[in-house]
Length: 270
Image (cartoon, rainbow, N blue to C red):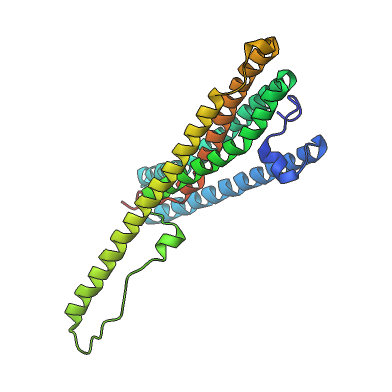
């Protein structure tokens, strides 16, 4: 995309701090080489495990070929279960890069035909759109963390507990008290998380509604001539692509959560 379509994705330019072809090509080649090395190492590790399992089962029973095949199949299934997010992540990054190109072209077209009033309107709206995107990202991220039971630190550190004098109270009675403390803490954290999610949702809703109302007021006076109307159409197209790109960026930010979630592992000895 960078060489043929003369557009370097944000993912690249944020790392290299430039749009210079030579620098970006060197950076990409380096990343490709690192990826190839990682694939080779992973392949060697898998092969080594397969060899060890074959030797182990061959030592126990030289005729147990079905067991060996079953183990290899389960290993491959396990790898497949643990890595779907990788494929999804890279497909999303490719889609994001394509949308970035379309958005850039749409913005270029808009800048060429926009009236001064339309350009100023776009400039003022840009910061509001960025703020709304950040709110949306926070809301989606926190909602997903709530699904996985991953609480923010400021909620997780909240705990209701105090020391009970077990020299006076029996151990059984003290444990009942401690269990109640734990339940109160858990319920409080749950309620705090729910309130936090609702507050983020409301913030995003208000900003999103404000942007929609503002976009409807975009200058398109017919008495300004053909340029004003064309500028309105071009801005609408650009704004739609911008929203699509921002939503894809939010999706990209969630992949690391999917990576950290525990997978259901089938026992290879069953």
